[in-house]
Length: 328
Image 1: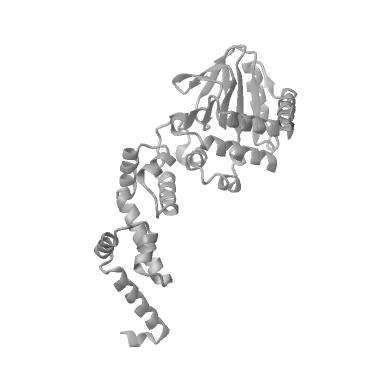
Image 2: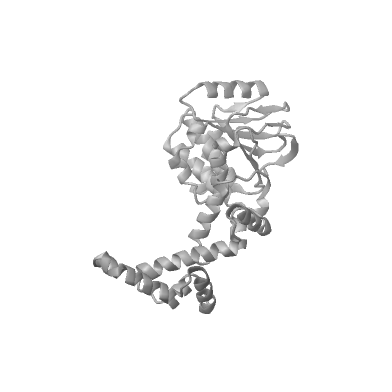
């Protein structure tokens, strides 16, 4: 037996000793009540097993439910679905959630108070736009009383399973109190969930934020401005390209192509003002092979060619170095 196998064996043996296993609905409700009443606890984790009861997952908390073993019938709001091992849900405080299973079923549930999600913690998952937006909106007053959820199928995905158990270990080991290691384990789990392929996300609510989503879409476009495509952004945010295009048009008044062009023109102006790069080099940096096309659109919008714009800005700067009356 190699060192890695030995470590894995010890890890799973340790999990069996944790004081987090519940057998019925009453135990779950009691534990969650104690969690809610303790101001020092921000995160809790429980595993149900050996039960065929319907287990209520109390609302009022952001929750992550993960089917560790067997099959569970999930009741999410007014919808029922069957999840096998590897099924995972993220739900906000308004979602109504319960489940039933067999004697072989094991379900892990994490509960989070809003105070758990500090700005620092959320900053660590900013590059995972779908999940970052989920947590931001779950905490927003805009969605109070509105059910929000994501449902994944990670069947056969051992990394998600491992990180879910790692977070469970840290939460229970620290007696449910917050610490840096627990938050690190949470971030690892979220990053791993975010790597799910498009087909791994099997359901989500249809609610769209008026502000947060648009800001994140535009920020992502800015970060990838030189190479960005509609299909890339749609895949990253789990939208159909046609839907994303319509959404951007509705929220900004511009199509995806227009947004990219306008932002590239603004970046071009900064290059012209702040660098000595040739116009050809700037246009290539912005992702255009056809300089004539960009020249034409730049002039249509700015009323000047890029060279004329640079010259105008240089003359303005020269004026600033002398007495302003001489420029009149």
